[in-house]
Image: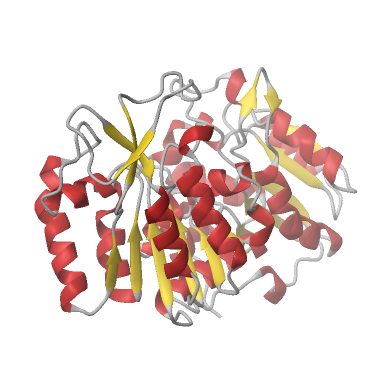
Length: 404
């Protein structure tokens, strides 16, 4: 998987050509306004590269999960407006419920070299996500005269949709954008060819979500650190008392197997030695909450963050690392009282000279929210995609792009 040698936007000539680019403009919206434009700014290097070289750039993306076809609240219009503020060229938004409708066809037919057309939300077409999305994929390709497709939406690369993989059957040239290239380089190389010692940190709520990741990373890394809600299933597998903490009883045997696998292969598997507990989960999430740090969790309390000794243990384990991958927070970091473990881990990563890779989703949100983003080597733009990549899976949205 690593060192995947895909054709990139630097390898293709685009002057005067129509180029369809799959971007990830799945931005958070509140009352029709974008609350965070990171995903749009992350796509700019690829977009600017193509427009500056004289391509006619057609952008497509999904946004949210519209259930019954087109819904105004999921329109890409706000994303197109924000993009227009960020680039030095003309941006046209083609509003069509069918995505490739009369407005899109007219806008693309009338565009000049170096201009941009943004299509409506690809999920307005139900067939985007289905096996019979070929017709939609063909329409997308026809819009750019079957010339060039650039995949730059890593967050959607694990889905074999019409606009991520299907369209490649109908175009002459395919390439990955800069964002995809960066993800392939960092995540792919970290897992397949890491500079050692390689430390992997896994947190988040459920063991079930990360079964294959745990298994794959125990084989690849030198030290595996477990925190977050998933730690309590591991602790219960060790025969420890976990009170009312989140536990997946169906995965206890699996956790035992992983503990044995780590021991048998000479890998370090670190689990919490103390826990921050409270009587219940904070509701609302940022509610005032009484906590205490304990060695053993009482029957009527639940673990909500790693404790101070554990935070020190984990920070110490990161120090000698040369490569660190982190996916999933150590506790309920959205509540300031329960963010200490996640902050301690983020701080230890910020202070190391290692290549530090944050695997998308909640851990990316935590690092950004806690102010450590600029200290990390790479923050992945994909939640589910980065997890599947860390599992060692082949992602369809990468697989379909031409090799060099």
